[in-house]
Length: 154
Length: 154
Length: 154
Length: 154
Image 1 (tube, one colour):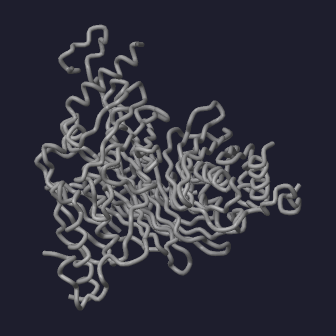
Image 2 (cartoon, helix red, strand yellow):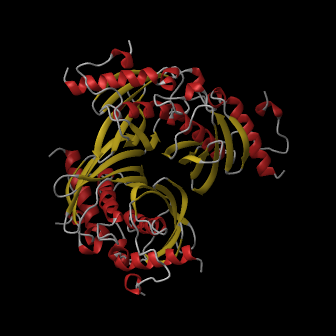
Image 3 (cartoon, helix red, strand yellow):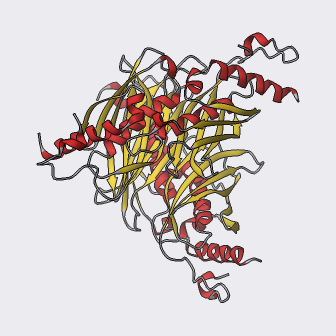
């Protein structure tokens, strides 16, 4: 595995390990590469709103987490500055959502990421666009030849 | 209380009663009037992300719920078509968020709502804009002289 | 040329012919296919704002026109419901902008289109996302075996 | 006139004087105060698109200019980072548009501004939201006790 791909995976593991909220909501990080991430989340009964369908906020949250993993995949810490989402189809309880984030452009310290949220049968249920702002520093120690399990483990 | 204000309150109570997700996340509906709603949500430890601050998705979810109450306050069912959010300040665990939704314009079956999310000391932490699309029908029986207690609970 | 591609081209020609504004601003329609369009516009001295760079509104206008051609390319009239744009780089007078629109998803009568605006050396200067709403009817007579030259002009 | 209001007016005059594009499109700057601006623009025949209505890009351009004047009104140079617009009503040739920008929040070096675009009879035809990023420096010499007439024109 090339160094950058490996680093992205280490960053993803470290972030996911400390991301209480995403784990609490039942998300899994399926894949992370430089500029890319894919996550999955089952739609639990608690996620349903007054119309009996999945709360848009929870669909957003899955997309937002996936965005976060993708924009941090270069091991430079980045935060969401702004996001927009279009809701295309209602989602039922018991369904399972998948979100895929693709980096579109990085310009200076800002990046733009597009995230598609699909349901179990592959229909697009929401489209999310996120703008990131990079901070200074690194997420994990950058000497990837010797990744100390300590920071990414437990 | 004028009829429209009373109707908005009844709609809000009925919606909140069946809104599993918003109640599960600890939100309270403090006020609802035609075109307006205000909700509150404490930031629980489960809401924190990998940076140790409140997940943006949960801030969005509070704003989105408040938007839903405001855009349904006329007793015509409406759903979110699209939303955008700008994140202005990080939010710590233990804080409490308040969201206020104001209707900006209703044009045909579409409406535009602005929601401000503030922290406990009154700083704006996020700005949300939601676009709604009205459906057909009513949320509760419109004869508000005789609201059937059944659908609006306690 | 397959029928759909040919129809898109006819629609594009007809629309461009009657689009006073896009022609007045010096745009050219380089290509149109179902769900896709590409336009070009030189940055004239009149387009410069108080900072001496291209007015963001004119960059938006190019992207918006390209969006319009792409979302009408199926010969069903569609209008812009909402758009967002991120400005990534300033553009100088004398440069030439290219905008490419790709359809992302069509769901019911709504569609989502992403448009990239690049400068002469291929740098992305703006990213635009447009949401369309289809109307009823057709743009040109759908019997494409006999397109009346009158409406589609040369 | 208080110092801040006077400064905003001087900044507005200086900016408008050098804003070739806004003047070329026939805009006028009617009022500017700290965090506020109002502009007007007649809808010329050249602004019409293929549907025979005002090109959305030109409505955006008016809103974007008004946004620029409002976010530069504190005499700290600021540029648009991103904008979104919702189109609510078509606009006919011969109409006249007015745009009003109100500052919503300034947080660090970013600001959020809402702009309403209305037609001659006062209907809202578009809602625009702009996010600004401040740069370093000043627009005009800050010693407002001695504004050199030269840069602020007539």
